[in-house]
Image 1 (spheres, rainbow, N blue to C red):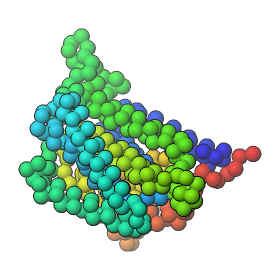
Image 2 (cartoon, one colour; image 1 turned 90 degrees about the horizontal axis):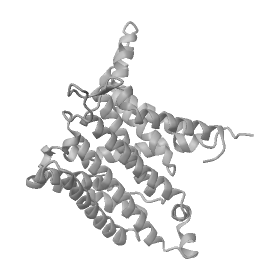
Image 3 (cartoon, one colour; image 1 turned 90 degrees about the vertical axis):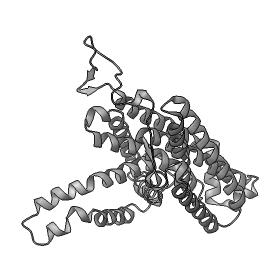
Length: 355
């Protein structure tokens, strides 16, 4: 990261976000806030893995949600069939990763030689087929209703991680040390490990080669790099990370269905997060995921408060009605793209050179 005041601001913001996610169960002691924090952790991994493709290698894919769904459905089906044990989680996760790996390798080897637009269309068609199959193979996937199941016992809310002399669950700073807390930290630390792995890849020699392919594919080929092999490798790597994120999300949510694991709305969210945060910057995935998830959960509430505050001004309550939150989210997105053309991180990182 460059030595600028913008970079310093980004580092400070990262530390604040990391601290808030680490202590989220103690800072925000309600169920909804914990759901938001867990979703942010998962989407940071999902967006960062997609940024490996579009930001670092220049590959446009619409199948990223499909790999996320493979992981989620793998764990969900295993937990449903085998019961709430770690063996089911492990088997389902491995199955999801293997399916993702095989499908990604097949798509990559067949399609990454063609032009970017055709590759994007092939991934879109494949993801559509998988979504239809998930909806129609109801005996396996639960169809449109999805699958509900139980997570391992250690994540049950009734599980007591620590008890006092009277046998009651111990509280730290007012928070019960129960299975819900264990479930959140399972999501947090798994997401942190996956994110650090991708961050390490981007600063490794492999990351440099990927950037070279993105900047000038023909030149990278000319100096001896096997472009198709590198692009296929990073496509498979990205698919595996997305699948692992899907498995973790399935364990946390205890429900998997087309809307939560395979929907194209998720793909659009990922694209928006990458653009908002900044393509080709791992830290941008953090900023994009935090801002968009927070907006999706809290913008409606914020608009309700604003609408009440301007109740005496003509037209304003109607304009700020909570039902219009998507309209205002679109306005905010347009403003962000206008003022931060390279994404928030990509734009700020070059601002304010330090002497």
